[in-house]
Image (cartoon, rainbow, N blue to C red; front, side):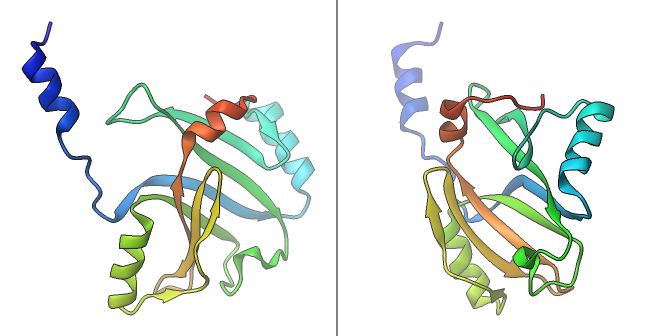
Length: 154
């Protein structure tokens, strides 16, 4: 058992707030028929699907008691959500300190497509990489998804 000094030291250690990507938050791609695609993945690969696709549940490596999520979603072919990218996919990255990361990206001349949108489950913004890929950055509030419940892919 840890002594009281060790416990106090652990709880007062600063949390890493370096503006950076911490993982994949979602994989989005075009599909001719999103319902058929979700059904195929559910029946053949065992994905637990919902209206948006499938939420994959995993544990945070630094805080194993915390549940995190990755969203897999087919989008109707031709959706403008990926614009101005001409690609058939978009990756969502989980980030920490989104505001700090945006400051860094601006100073590096990265194209920022919109302003930060805030929801109960996190903050979002879109950028473009040098290859013309639209990227979604997400500073998640995973506890909201956990509280909502619902079936997840594990």
